[in-house]
Image (tube, rainbow, N blue to C red; front, side):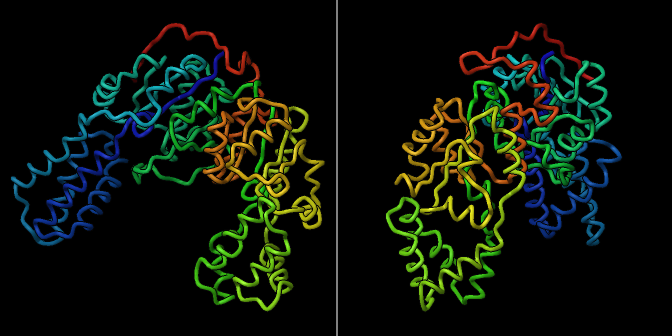
Length: 469
């Protein structure tokens, strides 16, 4: 059985909310010209929508009515007379959302056909059926989907219905969308996987706390579904971890500011002293640890290198290794080669052992420290060195780093790379990518993914049906 992706439409495949926001901004401008407060006018639209959506549902036809009701509420609130010409102007203003231009989001046109070769694709969207059908037709994407469903509300009950209708297994099904409320949380509730692709303009009504963020892969664009699914195959033989920001969390900005206040330092001075030009020299072995500490003392005004050394011990005392990441490293050993590739200081392995009782040489198959080799990320040479020691090709490795610059450098080399902004989400993304046997999701994936020349071989999807409910 093929795995299935259930994909949202608005603000996942194409732009939608920007047109509503444009209408609301135009409404605010008109109300301001009439003497109302612009911000109050826009807030009033939001109030009306929040009140009416549970009663009348979604759909652009109701949006014009919401704008008119917001105008009338402003008039009532401020003792103004409602005029029909303004009502007409406001109503017309909201008509933009009935047939907005179709602007596909980054990577959608290129990625959907690739996904369709290996997945059953189902479109699940909510709102006015005629409007959504029109947008889908104008998008040119309809032929990619085995089924199309337009519903009044997306919730766990709807997803259970789709699973029953299509014979879907939750562990082989993922919901892809931008809305925590309508896409992600319902999928988690029914046991599906979930891929969250946040949109900067997601409607406030769709925002919600994600119920179980550790089960959610978070991507920055639709195109990254390729890295998450299509390139997740057993051709991958090695996983490369960064240290600071991945295995070991870095000090937070607020923590740094607290120390700057304690030391009466100007904001930014501490970061520059610890991780600026001195650090750049240290991490390639151009200066010794003692020279680095003396430089920190000079920059921060400490009386001696010993005082600076005591300070750094205190400063880093709160930093602990993330046990979840180490557990992931240990779970991967034996099935994949595991490496630690770090921009660090001379003798970092010894300090890690002394402070954390972690033997990096025992935990990782390969240990590459920038200070030992005179190279630092994102220099291509250091990636080549790590790959050489692992004895793998770039496409056979996955790299996790908290620095986007380093991630982009790895991707240019042809290495699969995950930008770690939140460690639990990154591990979830890695788990999907590797079909990790530690979770039911990846156990199921192993039944349908077959590696051949570093890519997936999948049977073609037969037939194409469209059902609108």
